[in-house]
Image: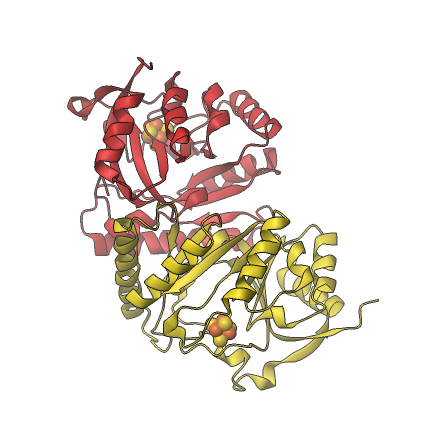
Length: 242
Length: 242
Ligand code: SF4
Ligand code: SF4
């Protein structure tokens, strides 16, 4: 019987995954609290900056799964683990095991700063090293190690870099040159996380995506990458829990 | 020496693949002429209705590849075969072979009305049976056969259905129930292919995508599908060759 408890911030869905390697996927989200980073433009800062403290509940894997089914009914068979950084949680394999027992696929996004053995059980894993605009610094040796382990086990994983400006784009090039064999996603950033007028936000996001597309199309470094926006921000703006 | 000639309508790129299983992919497009269907809302009718006849050139695989490099330089390593229906062309394996020799990945989209042996060499293959709103009728036995062959060879392929209305959505359910093991994409349709005001078009497309997302999220049939718009229409409207 699993008795470990995990800090859960939100459970919601089903909704569409708005970004990355399974963009468009119908999925439930489990958002865990806590992050070892503090990115300047973090759109989930409430998971680690104290502002969402009252929403954190310590739940067992069994409790999380029953809440998932309460909310999602029989309308889903895919779950996304999001944060914060879920890689902080040592025993998350308990949750992943329960989900797989029920035929549910599990995706994870993490910045790639920490390794956990349960990464090997994730169906779609995104390593998302943070570019300079975030204010964070990538520990390349740790990231090398993660990429090596996932490659060795033939896992379904990718690299994703959020790009706000030219310097971020250079960082993305560095990532791509370092791991040329790993499928690479470039994502246009949303630096307007306080904008509440969705029409204004949409037009800014479109221009940002267009800029990124043009830059990547002209590049001889990025020859077979994928360039995507955040669909959920286009649809729902900065609203949480959709 | 390859001497077969193929009816080529356009070669352009690199640009982003705006839809489906490799949405966001940086790719060159090769559009071939001719289709065995005549969908009511076809956005490439110029490939088969005679209106683009003067643009069709009969090129060998070698000529196509050299034109690709003339246009795309060293900025790409992915090519998408599009139409019309490229599955009409028996010897396309010649082109695919030349591209693979150069380390270039090859994607194909076809409605699934015809089988070709060279499907087994496609890196990302989309079978896109047409819903009732197209006016076309799916030959299920042919589609069964295609799905069986691709599955048997463990190919990387998916099903995609464009959805305009409730009837199309029911058709998509039928497809998903028939091939539950195949990754399924639902795509919101663009029935405004003559709209030249991109802002007007964008808002209509957003609403359509939102409707499709809501319908699929509420469904107990579509539990782990992917729901996507056409990004290129959001960005560039109905312009050709971008
Ligand atoms: S790693 Fe992610 S969750 Fe953590 S601070 Fe950065 S953006 Fe926020
Ligand atoms: S199958 Fe595709 S190219 Fe052929 S008529 Fe239909 S939409 Fe157009």
